[in-house]
Image 1 (cartoon, rainbow, N blue to C red):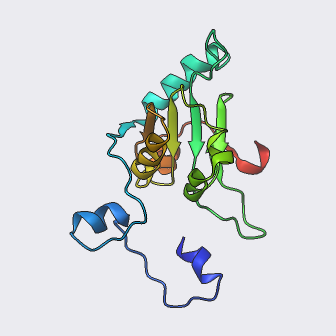
Image 2: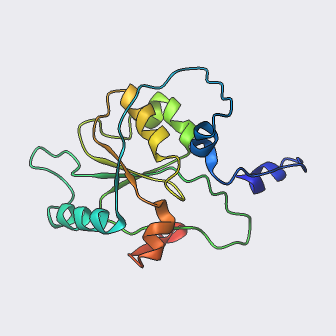
Amino acid sequence: MAVAIKEYGYTNVKIYNGGLKDWIGAGLPVVSDEKLPEYKTIFLSAEDVKQRMGVAEKSGCLSENGLPLLTLLDLRTERVPEGAEAPLVIRSSCQTVSGFLDDLQRDDFRKKIPVDSPIIVITETGNRDEYAARYLHKYGYNQVFGLQYGMRGWIKADYPTVSLEKQ
């Protein structure tokens, strides 16, 4: 994120390593335009997500009613500089919806995400999954999970990935 901001000409950019979660935990001030509903986000280990994907993929990723058995919601904010390698994504034949956290505010983006099926949020480290889950809960999503340690945890576990450009 800091790199993206610097591309706009800002030079005095600092990163708060703990993210918003630690900022709030430290009692530091925050302001919000709207209050998100409380929602207890359950974090799944990379191993659990891999197992759930395997079960879903054996059924063609769809239930008997044609609903997705799970949807991967990739909300990483990586911007790939020209000439750099494309980021890795989880390799799965199940539905994957990619966007940015701010896209959740848009009706047209949320329409891509099934309301009545499990959703696994993927961020870079898992720190923002809770906010995505709370935001989705506001719109009636009740089966939202976070990927523990995010995409970094998935890669560290050496589970299947593919380059975004090859997907």
